[in-house]
Amino acid sequence: MAGDQQQFFLKWNDFQVNMMTSFRNLRNDKSFTDVTLACEGQTCKAHKMVLSACSPYFKALLQENPSKHPIIILKDVPFNHLEAILEFMYAGEVNVSQEQLSAFLKTADRLKVKGLAEAPQSIKRET
Image (tube, rainbow, N blue to C red; front, side, top):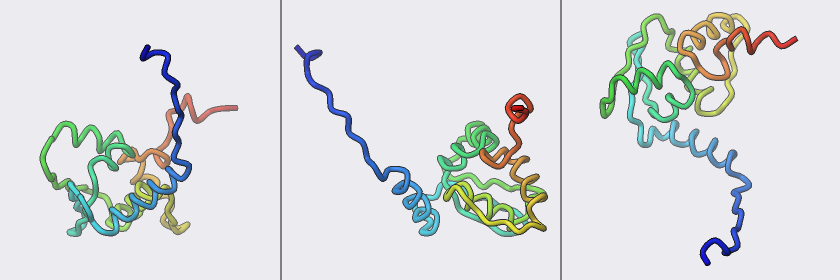
């Protein structure tokens, strides 16, 4: 009898907008942060889940070092790049000046940030 029950499809129409707003609020409030990123003598708090979802580099690093609240020191990463990368991860967009764009994209590529890092050659060359 259980297989005969009618199924209902429920959908949250504003899900993506709500999640983006929630992520942005969590970042701004520093609520539930569980990782600290450090570079150039400055720090940023973030969420392991967001870092892992947006970067296989951070995902592997956090999986290999399962600490309750790790501090990750990023050598050769300018602090303004880190802030912009976090903005991109949490909001899906970021403004970067033209003069900083090339260096910023190299930093994002080193950190394997999805949406900013270079795609594999097989994907990039669609002609």
